[in-house]
Image (tube, rainbow over all chains, first blue to last red):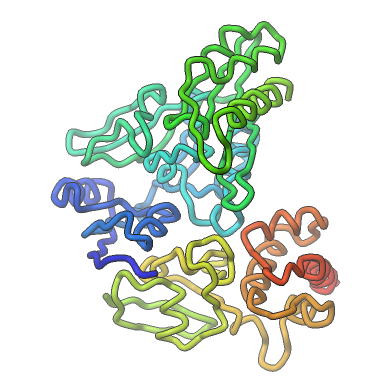
Length: 266
Length: 154
């Protein structure tokens, strides 16, 4: 399988990439790890005329602590995140999530920024970034802005990013007590259901992916939680649950409750 | 587009189309046909090679993305006529049946052992989740990697 023809440009800075994106508009796509984009291009589901490779931009692959937050460059791979001491120590739920993605080869290439921008409804990170209340930092022609994660995911493969914007980093508060539970699709290793739970005191924040066309915070669980994992029964309250040949509505709803319960009990 | 990269210690420079995959480049331009095309959709791992020390699925990489990089393919594992310990272990412990998945298995095994020189059986199985053996010969593949680890560590 061979993609349709395109021009390839390797950007050396964020501003260069933004200018190129602005110039080529809808015909251009950003390439980072490429592990969602290239398969889509090979199947010709996506036919960009210009690929802007941002993988070589310096400073976009670091993991640092700034003002009590963990700041992860958009080009950090799942492997970088899974093996970072800082992430394992202070944001362990994100390391758990990164380790659950794909396989060694995929984790060596796929990136956090790429996964979020792609917004696959079965991706793992969305559950965790929602539960952590992370902030997406994006840069476009108008400059840099911070997008609260609660505003970021807008639908299937749809985010709050403008056409000329690129994710440059993601900021996370430190999380002491978090757990990610995933029911793997047995062939693709995507999440049929993924549930991230962040606990602090008697409060929980619950992010769920794979269940609806947009990942969501399970407010029903959060409001019902009083220390008992029975709150998991509310995992799909007011949610339009997806159905496919791997999991119909009833089964997927059941899985969401079971995974939520496990994450709450962990 | 011009790319320059090092494959198995030798430098190559070629003018290629941006849409050429790294698998295609290795097989069709460099004639290194040990890297196999299985599913061609990053599921099966038959096309696994090492790029800058990390196992990658070359079917899901454009050759232009590897520009400036250092690659090792299955052809670069042996030292002359002496097989790499992983290759030797696969031979001695019947780690292959039809052999189609073997280059990818060996390249992934190298990444597993680089990150974790003493993996448990479970860690090896987990590490191989991106590589399919349609002969279903996983037991001996895992056994081979365990023996390779012992050989390398001794």
